[in-house]
Length: 267
Figure (cartoon, one colour):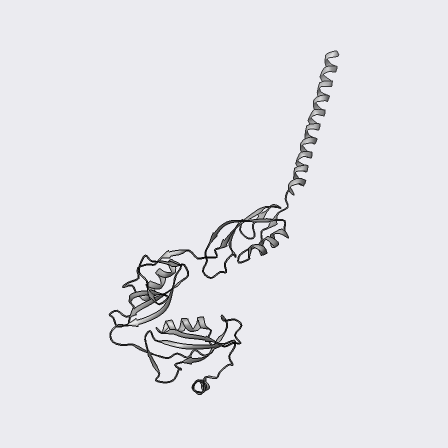
């Protein structure tokens, strides 16, 4: 009888210990959930092209933080703006998570000038772009193999393979014009922006010469051409590599095609 009582008391105590342990464990998990906001996440915002200050303000609103991890250089993005982040945008993270950002450098790095001699114009453009460089002014001189690179320039001075040049720079290309002197009709640039005109001129192997903005221009990137020298008129021809001077104002009036020649002459 005595042994039965001991065994019964032992089982009761063991059951109490078991339930107490279970209660403590569940309570611990519940406390951990409350401390870590278990199941609650924050969506990381897209910080691309924001300044550091803008990113810090945006992240603070969502109880997140940021830290500069690295810097790089992107040609067509303003300095000191964010070019990448980790974790990526739309990732799910916990509150107070630190977001590591890479910013665009203030000063572009220097790269080696590639050897472009005797390559085609299209190949030269691809090679330059692979180094973070761009084709600038195209100048044609007598030579065999039209559009073959004869030499290169930077800021109107000769530049040799291996010379250091800032990433994002425009490299002038001296090209062969083939046999004899090649000519092209003067294109009509009226109403185009400068970047659109430069693209068109390069496609017909011409260059933008003097670029002049009216005083009322507030945004050079959207200003439009209202005058050019020489004008686009029948039978007016230019040799490959020659230039057209350009005049821009903020916005031009739409010009009917039938008035093209007359308006050009009045200018």
